[in-house]
Length: 345
Image 1 (cartoon, rainbow, N blue to C red):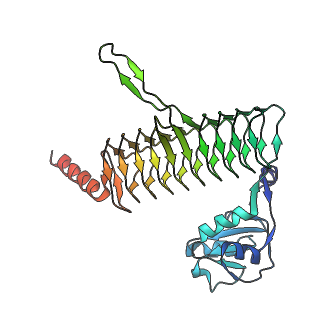
Image 2 (image 1 turned 45 degrees about the horizontal axis):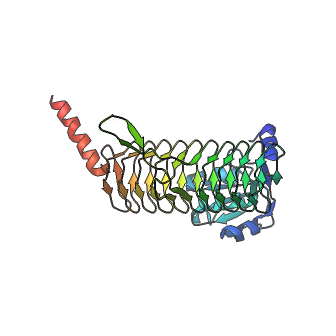
């Protein structure tokens, strides 16, 4: 059960919209069973649910607990269709339906306007209901779309373009010339558009000369970038992050990389320069990818997988593991063979 302290936290940080269950059903395209006039004003886990909360169940074995909880309504799959005791929303994908319900019920508290300690150049174009928080800096000729929030201490470089409904958490740095699409979320401490790690060695002196880093970074719509992640600009062309891609904390993406749509990258993964990641690729934590490697559509790389430079991985839905990464069945067979060799010795 949620404590009074937790409720105070929710009230301070979030705006809660009360809705009838029948209205929620319409929004999330679920089938209503039971009283549709029940008021819902929050979402919760089964164990912490309060009287007006909505919960979800993906596995039939937890349905009984949900029906006995304090929750006012339950989102569940077809397995719950014959159940009684609480109003139900029957959905094909209960967890997805729950996430969508949460999106309409709970929203973050925010203001609008420019804080008195923020520094915004006179040439900056701010859309309607933009909120620039304390000590943020927005440089000349930047553009920020309507209903976007720039968190405290952010630095927005010259000519940066940020679309509508974006959320920049505190201390995000966006270098000059970077473009962000609509509904992009960037968490605290991320650095976007910095110089790539590109050098040319002078054999006679042994010194490294910096290769020009004059390209740009483009972040498409609906991308989320985790805390303290870094994405470099292109060297001469561009680095591009495709629509709907989700990047975890502490991820590095090098210059000239091109990521397709709906890519998922877990924490502490690193991409060298000029890596191509096609649509729907999934990368586990601590994956390392060498320069000019290519991962084709739908490839899955397990945690700590290593991909050599210029390597191509292909096979939609195929899971790769190990270093160098290979299909998991091959990887497991090789591990088993090594184990057998160890026993013989």
